[in-house]
Length: 201
Image (cartoon, rainbow, N blue to C red):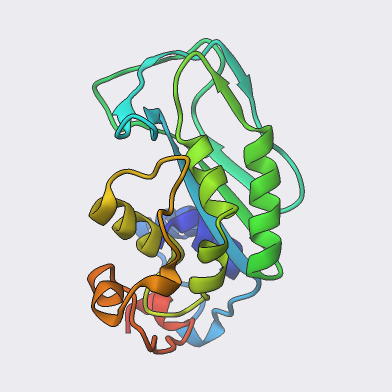
């Protein structure tokens, strides 16, 4: 689980807690004290071109318009005028949405992605816009089921080629049981208790 997502749904500052533990302190709470609230989702913004096989896109950021709004968190170190290098991870930012439920999060993230603009290089912002507006994404990936939304989308994209503006070529309804298992989607997904995601049990 990405730590911004965990922080938003638990209200805990994980980095602060890690520092306290490194200083020799004990956690000031037990697992039973951790309660999940709301829903969160993260888009990892990369310097790459999703319409060209996710080809890296280094270069100078000539214009940066960052999204804001209720329930929107943006963790980033990029800035206008910065030159994105070719030598490292292409991650530019983590754009995270929080809300009362999945539908609200998708709506908030969609607005934030529409506001987001990074000039001078290619990014995968357009890819996330397509994913969030795809009905299969909203319908199939319910919280706390075996396969996450991004798992389904990315495994399908790997199996059938990179996501393009016309993706998906056909509805997930048309996938047979074998294809569903092939992309990691259980035809009869088992519920997973939310708290298990925090301790791995």
